[in-house]
Image (cartoon, rainbow, N blue to C red; front, top):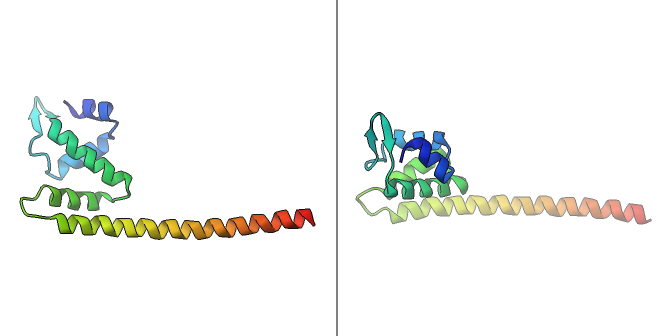
Amino acid sequence: MTIEEASEKYNIPIEILKEYESWGLCKAVKKVMGEWQYDDQDLERLSLIMTLHDIGFSNEEIETYMKLELSQNPTETQRMKMLNEKRNKTLDEIHFREKQLESMDYLRYKIRKEKDD
């Protein structure tokens, strides 16, 4: 499957596919007639990359995570640490947004109360 076919079929932006290729993680990806050819293993990796992207990992974090994922050494602890850090950051953002919502709701309440008086 070419880069264009993979992009279209799996709705993965070409930029992400090119980034993936530049990381040197595509050992199974072959160049045929000047075009990259993706196999099922590459598509599984790309699915993981898209998941990491969707949960807020930067390109640099994704590259680090993927290199750990593909390492011959055990890297579960390092990958879990990365996920825990991202999870904690996300929870902090959620709590911050909840406080914002509480403040908005209070101001809305005040306006309604003034209107009713």
